[in-house]
Amino acid sequence: GRDKAGLTLDGEAFLTRLVSRFQEAFDRVYVSGPGGLPDLRPGQGPLAGLESAFVRTGAERLFVTAVDLPFADPALARLLADRLGEQDACLFRRRDGRMEPLFAAYRHSCLPHIQACLDQGRRAMGALLDRLDCRLVGADELPGVDLERMLFNVNTPEDYLWAEKISNSSLQ
Image 1 (cartoon, rainbow, N blue to C red):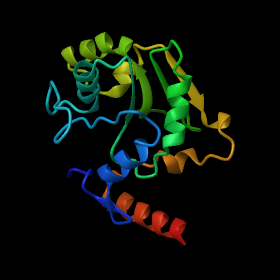
Image 2: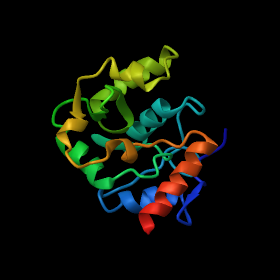
Image 3: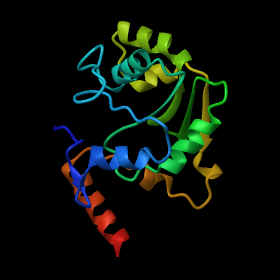
């Protein structure tokens, strides 16, 4: 129910933590939304943020991560970006079969599909993925990687407490 960018973990705001870590993996890091690239369609969610990022940067390829993934790994982000190839998107498929569209690489070829979804009032990332040629990287392709931890999403106060606990235990 509130902006998660300012939540802290290990004394660092989620957004600051994310930007500093991802600057090591990518030449440029853009932030979509307040304080960053303004959305062309404010209040329309992550799909509108992706639209704005492509339009405002002119980038051919973008890697997208949600601010509320405190354990997101820049090395795995780089892996997805490198595996994008000629497909529209490259993303992880979890062990339970779900795809993770908010930790994924996208090609500019997605933009017309993004705009069509938004024009039709279809704001869910899943609506976009249904239209794209996606490269899926399965958890089974990443032996030794705790993909569920890396893609852990903070949505509730309980999730936040769990993230603090896990982060504190990994520091010891």
